[in-house]
Length: 305
Image (cartoon, rainbow, N blue to C red; front, side):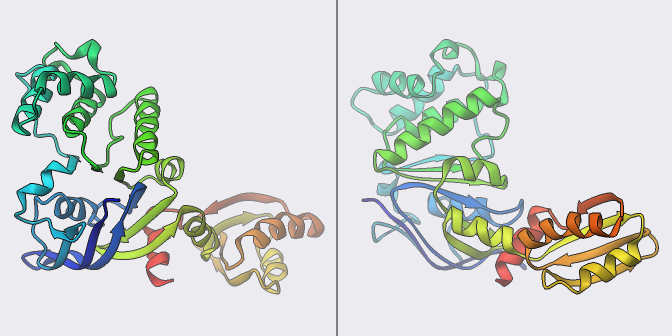
């Protein structure tokens, strides 16, 4: 069982703190690293992959320090978000070069297996310069898998993929996790993580915000205070009827918007209460819209939870 351990790791660039005292363990199976853009996901993955040194703390692979330890590359495959590919090569040449760099006994056979795994045989003889974004992602994946690593690190791997390519990659990662490999992928899209990972690690603004089973963390996200903008035929009467219920923590009349701003602390109860109260009072609802549904607001709540 291969495990990457991050122990009180921080990383800063000048005066900018990209990762702030993060501790987590990434074990066998598929783990999602979830967070908004700029949260520090790429920095963490680069430290796990040995391409970036922690400013403080340690990152280890089964107890061995990863930084400046070339032996770990026998076990790690990395699919970076940024593209560092040679467009003048064909896909096959690119993957073959990586197989040769790993010193594999039969690099040609390894390259063919890796390209077949990501279903890129049909385009393997085309130059990378002719590839779409999704095809480039898959060739990067093949080059990361060519030495059959026990650990696979992927930074936003679904970017640029069409729906069919996404499903293929998700199925591949599930199979790798089921085979006992340690698979970590980063994403800022909740639905991607929900479809693929049972265990997730959440980072926000460089801090470790939450860790555990996806369903439990999804419950925290759902049960957090929600803010709504509500327009109705009688805002004053609606506010008076709602404020008495325990599902709301505050209601404000917004004269500029000519609407109510409502903070609901019991999401399920409030969504049942609002239409019922409006119907009983003969009030028409013109608009009910969430005003804090950005990922940043969700993750900020998890940090404070």
